[in-house]
Length: 384
Image (tube, rainbow, N blue to C red; front, side, top):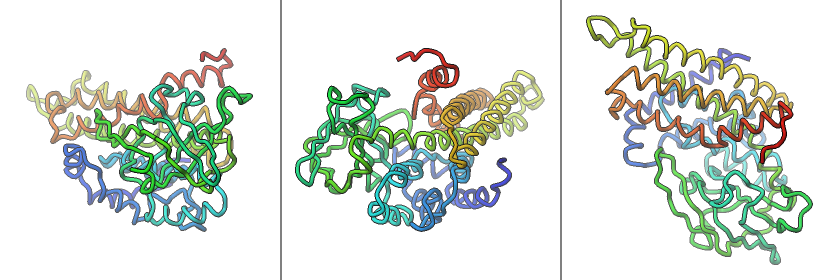
């Protein structure tokens, strides 16, 4: 499986992105705004429905094709972080929802009538230790009453639906700590102001993310996805897809940085010669290219396994680790190549520099990936 097999997808996304040049994303970033027009264009063109089966109005494509879409957006200078949730958040519903739920929501998600860009999992006091989450959902008749708090929940203000994880059985009453949590579909238009309060978090990246305060939020019983108490497993099922897609975005970033650095190094004249003639300038760019190419190979391996419905947890984690690391090194190389001009907003490097730095922290930090590989691949004792 190679990148060259998807030129039709690359050409299509590239053509759409041509209508949204660097200036567009620069202005959005400076205004701390949301790229509404860009996301609408992607959705109307069908790119956001790549993973939704054709019977629900989607394209029925695999994670490989979806990863090419995300990669190409970033490779063209955009930021998939504004919309990637729409690509993978619906997986929890698709793989674990009832036929009725899928018929109710998936056609609207595929057409763009509904956005499901948010997933409410992380909490202020638990972070990555999801099994210790404090948000509770108590059934009362035909409703669940939810109370708790979430943090770093992205795109809430540009979404219609949210996937919410809450504990339905107290931790002390379950045999395993991963049991007793359930997943719900939340209608954000009904919830906000009626038990759900959203507080934006200003951050280093123009990435719309929020803190959520949940106070007696009522969710209809029919909005429970799958079986009560099995929500943690449902959430985990979607994480491999998320990590593969994030890896592809980082690879897109990496190639963007390398292209910009190499072009500038060829053109910039200092001491009567292009700076790219100097090995001190050449070598970091070449090294970054090698690292991105290597990460890309692991990305394709993870895609191949995922689309074949084979275990791919290790490969998805390693692809995300390698790609995030490679894109960050490419970002450093590009900024260094440009010198002072790299800090100028008009070159877009500082914007992309900030954006790609996120992916060593989230989703899933580098250290957690190393812990996963140590335990599940190398057989080392569990560290936490």
